[in-house]
Length: 95
Image (cartoon, rainbow, N blue to C red; front, side, top):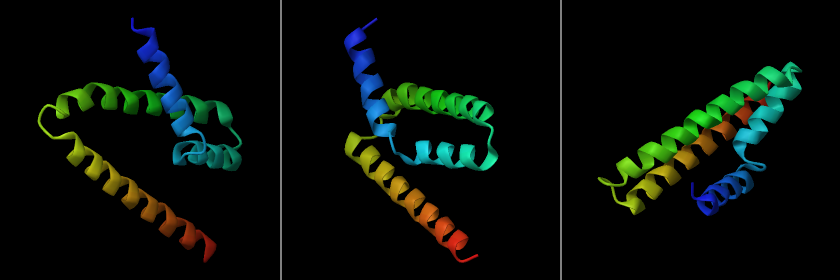
């Protein structure tokens, strides 16, 4: 196993996820439902599956789609999700 690559991926993802929407969603869900263990387990499984998809399909897709196009699409999706989250939060504030 390439331990340098392992720790590089670990620390990159760890730093990127601190304060990210995923962590904030889990934080809010735990605060609302008061049941951290099933939320932790469900969120962990989801993150494992999403990371699996990214790791294995990312290499495959990059054979057919240039990296700059993949980054552009990812950026558009990120902006779209941000707009959706903002819209939902404004709806909650107006109640």
